[in-house]
Image (tube, rainbow, N blue to C red; front, top):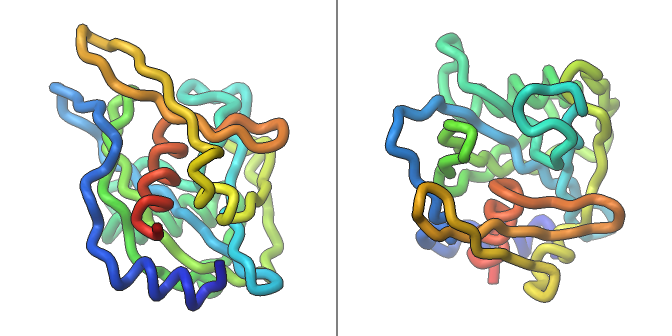
Length: 189
């Protein structure tokens, strides 16, 4: 899928309800992530990070750059860009915001707003080793193929819900990251 095809499909469809089912009863902390897309050879790829193994929350998991919205952040978009700059050295001047997906409540007590953006392919990533072990890309087309989507049903607090998975090479993309990708794939289909 090219950048122009993505824009046409993303902007001409209204967002449907998310497949994400988990809901918290307690107050949630706001967070934002950046679903960064890079176009190379007329194909889009998605940028991911592997979280550092020593982190308290979600160690070693595959995620999008992002994190908690701070009091000084002007918006979810500002928080996602700031976090991407801090975690992987993404240059904010090379980010073109396209839109966002519906917020997601996580088991760890956050409500996460995914911000979608195109980024320049000329990035000099600088990994903050306190937060990130690895940066990698996956072709967007992989996530648009629903044969690559898996889910298992579990129960939490006597309520059933699905955990989504999308294995790619030696990475297992799961949880909120996977369901965000699934919602994006549904939106683009």
